[in-house]
Length: 306
Image (cartoon, rainbow, N blue to C red; front, top):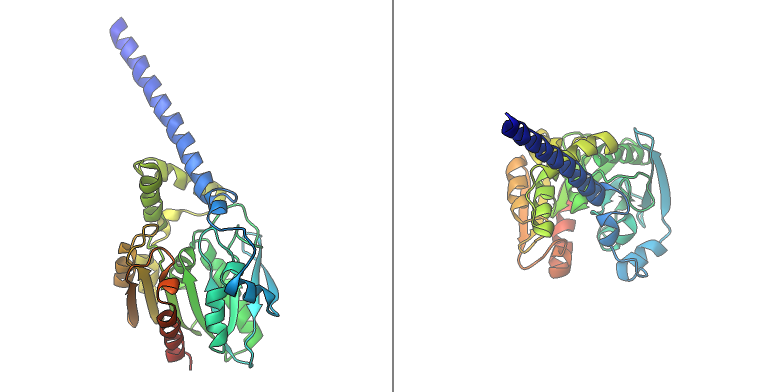
């Protein structure tokens, strides 16, 4: 009897240690990946703005402000076209970035003659919030920005959507909810699911299995960030959309694996187009094939803007 009691105590102790370790590990993962000032603060250089980023920040842009449905103050940079137009492109930044670093992509569409709105997603740049939305929480915010554009440009307003990395996921998660005047969308190196990306990064960066840490992090996400990231899946959003979608990915992407583009392409309805840029790493398609990239995305926009 005494031996059984000791074994029982040991088992309960081990279970307790496991639970405590899981809760602590899940909390660390959540704060590291989601909380402002975590890993996202290390992914963008804070050096002086140069090149197209410098150009963008020197333009006569307007700073727009919106309140999110959960009370956050959100900001976006609006750059009107040189010649008045009802066509606007929403350009959405990636994880750890901000609108001010999107100069190259803003310039592509501005030079093509369009208005450009570049939002700062929640917890990034000028926008408020303590936790990243990873595109899922941000989709409602993007809908508010689209409504604002339509107020400014009137009943003939036409909108295109462009996003890179987390911004690309934001675009794909917003599709299916978008108003009819969204004419096209371009996603560059976006992930299909938040959970899949976290699973991959946990193994790639730390050599750890996803279970049970990612599942525990999901509990913290629901409690503190206000959303269940397991719901974020392009399978559930793209099937509701028939907005023309152009999917781009680097063949050597080791941050958001290239396999994501095949999943997203499969999940999307027609019309759709896929381009895998040979030799490009994460977010490097533009730098790898600059002139072709500019032509491809501007031709795509012109094809569906009327």
